[in-house]
Length: 178
Picture 1 (tube, rainbow, N blue to C red):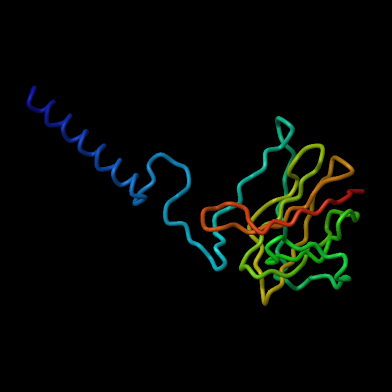
Picture 2 (tube, rainbow, N blue to C red):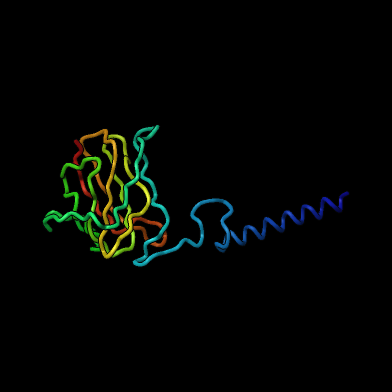
């Protein structure tokens, strides 16, 4: 009986050691966190989902996801109203900074990355719209946002992700809600 217990203990210890080694080399993911082997796109952006900004309310607002319109609805606006990321890789043509942004309006622009992410933040309750990445087609992106604002002001964040999942090329646009 003692021999079986020793063999069982040795096997369990060996499995733990092998699992730990595989976890340490990134071959498998046993304890959660970022999965190994995430796919990276051009310009260093990742296909992983975006990290979420915490909501300022305990229960959190109901969030809605943008509807990707595949770059077909990029508004034709004056270049003086565009907001460009510091890197120059993302240009948001609509909405303009400090403009009124209503549910159903389109976010659109140009990008030199394959996907962009949108996050609409209400100054009162936090994130009110966020979802899957928006495809950049022939250098253009667009999406319709449906949301319920709880404040009169907020911010639209448009960004891409690098290969480690960090937000890069961010454009922050202050908006007003009515």
